[in-house]
Amino acid sequence: MISLNYSDLGRERATVKKLKRSARLVEMTQYLLARPHTLISLTAFAERYQSAKSSISEDLAIIKEVFEEEGVGELHTLAGAAGGVRYIPKCRMDQALEKIATICQELQQPDRLLPGGYLYMTDLLGEPALMQEVGRMFASAFAQRHIDVIMTVETKGIPLAHAAASFLNIPVVIVRRDHKVTEGSAVSINYVSGSTKRIQTMSLARRALKEESRVLIIDDFMKAGGTIQGMVDLLHEFRAVVAGVGVFVESGEVDNEERLLHDYVSLAKLTEVDLKTKQVTVTPGNFFHTSA
Image (cartoon, rainbow, N blue to C red; front, side, top):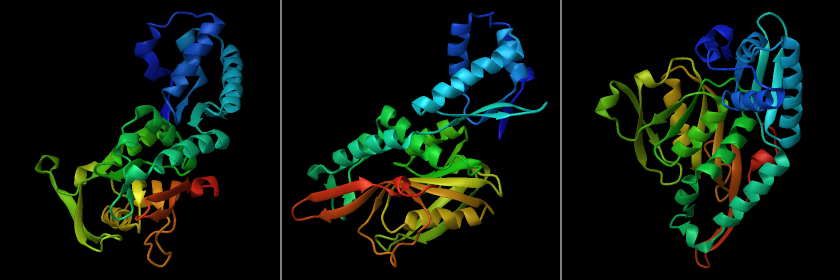
């Protein structure tokens, strides 16, 4: 976990003046929101705002109550000399379900249906505000998994991965379908696409991922799970641990025996597709039925 103490704030301290409590609450809230999963000591806050620790503790109690009531997240307090406060982004399930229901309605538009039972989602993946909400859902689902890095495969999964990473405060690594010479030496593997049954290649630069990292895999769409299984196999080459798998939309048109992956969190599920009538049914995913 990331930690931040008062020595890390030395450059900022000189620019912070003693604030009225109302202004301090606003500034502290913004400071916490910008540093999720970062342990910040009470001493750091006291030095930053030139206030007593008792006053800082009272402010944090107010912020904690508002965060929980509004579904923004949780403030975890650690006691002791090395303690402090850590903001954990979360989403209220009712708010998340309302947003996903809207997304499901949008995905059910007949003109989104593509050959092979896929859905056109590029426009949704390009909306920053929507991706932030989806990223918060992924971050909430995997908040307790102690993740070091998020992995996705180019290209459509990149906005999802970066959105989730912003709330987990961790880096993103991108698996390439073609190795780029500018990335130096890489590990490449062949994998079988679960939907097309074709042999394909993916690669990851050796410098992109430390060995034995705990990795969260994020992808935009999962049919049989071949691409994600390929990333899992690639991680074995780095002796990395798969800490979780999150998918934006999963296909329900695949039998359990055909699916290559069973342990994952989905936000939406494509449950029915009729190519003749272009009838599409999308429902909330298993995130809303099970806890990660």
